[in-house]
Image 1 (cartoon, rainbow, N blue to C red):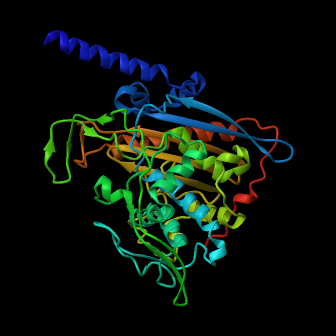
Image 2 (image 1 turned 45 degrees about the vertical axis):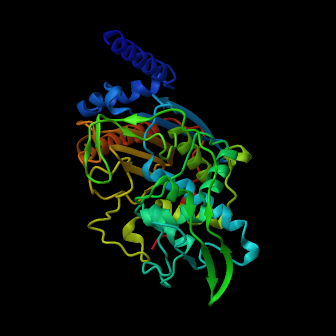
Image 3 (image 1 turned 30 degrees about the vertical axis):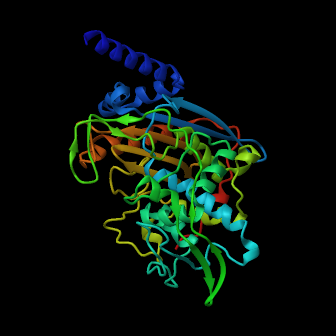
Length: 416
């Protein structure tokens, strides 16, 4: 029995050593953060095992023609170290939805065409109206607005249903995101229920322009690598289970893939053609507006800004407080938070100081090791981590020498 225990411990140590050996780390980035870190950030940086953090800083330099060139700096980035991507999967779901719509233009539909959803299988929800929309009707465009403004889960679920599990993942894999896996809505459903997607009707003036039939997806996913997190967890029946939570068949989106997807939206020409999403100029303008707009600037939907304050979905620089965001700054991003994991990928722009960079990070804050107990150190450690890392990188990037000042007018949006 003791030999078996020793063998299990040895195998675990070897597995951890293998994972850490695959870390991508630039000593310069670690030195920069450590040299400026508060005691709290020093504590996080010194405890990788506990906080499982990853950071990617994408430096952007413009040539004389204003073309961007990118340099990536990594800190413990490892696509084999699982983290729950939570709402960050809403970014690819929105991009695939826009891509699919562009392929259906001959049907006379676009992102603003009313989209009515049937209930075609157990646990599905029919949708025929949307009171947050100006015209009271649901649409892909309205769902995407809500996904970026406040990370709305219901809006994501309907994008997921339009995308289709097989089609969405197949498209992402063809673009090179082979480790990305999106197989779940954000509502309680079985694996079988998540495979099934609803019938969808695009209608205008009472006329059906296009119907997408209900589907059961049969795409095969690689679940061969077990992913167990924590020491215990509460199940869907609120019973405490004294074993790790199994994420083997959950969504997966490595930080490098998330960063690259964001870069492909902000700077589509900077990624290989096969990685680009088939979007129009108008699509990009639409995304730039709602990826950077604040809840207070939205009329449809109209949000209670006491709950949805301006930095509600802006983790870097501002999230740990509700302080005013300077008018000269905008953050184009998609964050996620769940199960003790906090993640954000952001293109950060300071129009006054001519500063731009991409910053992506993830941290795990779950001191008691129990998942689904709603006891995570988001406010104590997680949000301050993002705020401080963002501040350090921002100050460095703002003050570093550039051969050419960037022309950033492309990212100036006319908000309300």
